Image: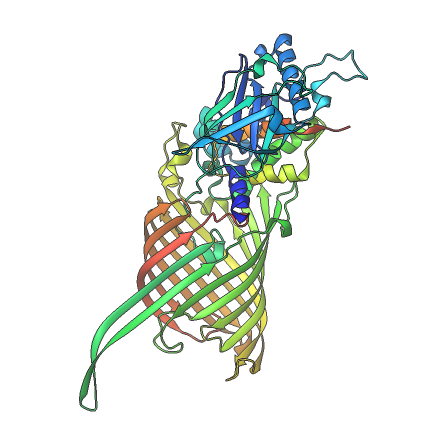
Length: 102
Length: 476
């Protein structure tokens, strides 16, 4: 596998910085302890987008495949009450559950 | 069955809680629920630091994978002994339906036989998924997993790392859902499943008729109800990976405003009932950095029946409504719990929530007047109406909020005359618990709404109850 847990965390941080640069600047290095509700208020879709837009490029770059039901289940499980650091860990868990293509 | 399904769903949503057990360092073994792709309890073997992942440790992890890969192919009851204990209950053996090794299998855990010259490094993490026959009990569980292959089971020798049981004294049960937001009108935002408010006034009074005075009790009641048990049916909604376009299908919603008095005179309510499905298309805009932002455009299509309280005047119609949402002007107050551990203190702006949501729409339908027999309906003709309006609100830290909704209708059926409607309210939220919130509210309502039978000009003081996170569909 090409990516490590640290890579997933760094990429998720970058995704959040792109989506909510102001909020990320506010929490600084403690961004991983903030809950997604801080970044996305009550919009569950944005929380799911943040995880999806981190995970999908990782899968593409490493030529791995994740089934649609597994992806749907993962995105549905991203909640606004979860800490950003935990979500980064879960992105890696999902990435590591994927299978190589070919 | 249904309870199990809800339980499983909540378990999928719950955060990943895990407790390290006594697998030999640096391999950490843990039990967790809510792991993506595992509809049960996950057993995770992990090496935290890359520096610790030496060839010897790699061999140990591969040995665990080999044993697990063989064990899951047989009867899981032969290889795994899984017990959980809920608070104040006896320990219980968990019957396993099956076990799976998650991830890429041999492709990830063994060298590529076609290219043995390429240096091989296995993953730093191995996950097994134990799927129980029945859902685990709710709440925190003291869990213990032992590896107990009987002699002659045809499995490889048990690796040394599996000789000790893996434990988690607080294996997570279903997560507690959050409290509903305070201020936004549910009927417009579809932010929650239930929004109910009501007022009852009762007084005794003397009335004199033909010289005879009688004492009687007069009761006035009015209520507003919004109910949409399933906010989004995923199978009929669209959400493609890579896109910022999503759709939401809400199969049924009912919005009722009724009082117990005459519909046409001195009423406290609009006395109208609107019911039907909705389909929403939502486009999220990207910001200059390329990230999906909280600026979005909502197009809400609906096919609904609007009627008066007594179902005498009915108006089946289709409608389309456009709502641009500007993220900065539509933010709830930040919950301090969402910042716990960050050291960041909320700014004044973060303590004040705000709503500014203009909308424009049109609707087309036909009016029917019901006769004495319910089946006897007289068509009154078709109509095309347009409307513009907006929701405006301010919320002080989820405790006190002020909101107003203003709508102006252009009635195509009566010479394009304009009809104004406004509803302004202030509320104090005194209960905010998981799934439910309650508030005392003062509402001033004036004007008319389709089907335009009641004209209201009323000030009411009552109780509002909101409920959300029912788990029957997805959030919208």
